[in-house]
Image: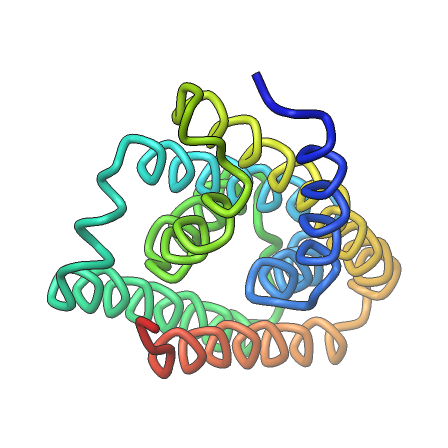
Amino acid sequence: MIDPVVLLAYIPAALALNLTPGADMMFCLGQGLRGGPRAAMAANLGIGLGSLVHVLIAGLGLGALVAAHPGLFDAIRWIGVAYLLFLAWKSLRASALPEVPRVSPRRAFREGLMVNLTNPKVILFVLAFIPQFVDPARAILPQFLLFGAIIGLGGLVVNGAVGLAAGGAAGRLMRSARFAAWLGRVSAAIFAGLALRLALIQRG
């Protein structure tokens, strides 16, 4: 289905992208700090599923609608900004409680999925990066899905490692009320920073 030479060129490029710090990595870091290793991995899986949805949409050709219609792009983007600010507000409010509640894996998965799906930059990236390796003489959608799965697998490993490290460190320190309050404020800052980043991105 895919030329092995093309695949060998694609894998290092995809890995380099996975290793570049970005919004997904920071989100897994934040969820690991808030909920521990299990929440970090759940958030990582949510992000991975969201990425595969973007790849499927791009492979079906629907992503061209987002690229061609600025209004649709902006609508999705501002939904994502609002959701991230909501998460920041919840983290900040929790930091003022006597005992900061930990994020459950189910909630972390849902938040990771939503954050990824409401970032239109992901589908524009998919449309810009993956077609460079797609052979138009062969079935397009299976190639998109395979290339997307490779990026998704790399993201699961890299972002998962970051989230697990953060979750392990947080788990050992959560007994301290002062640390727990500080943790809530740091998580709020991460989500607010991601919201600002999403608000400032350009389509091009």
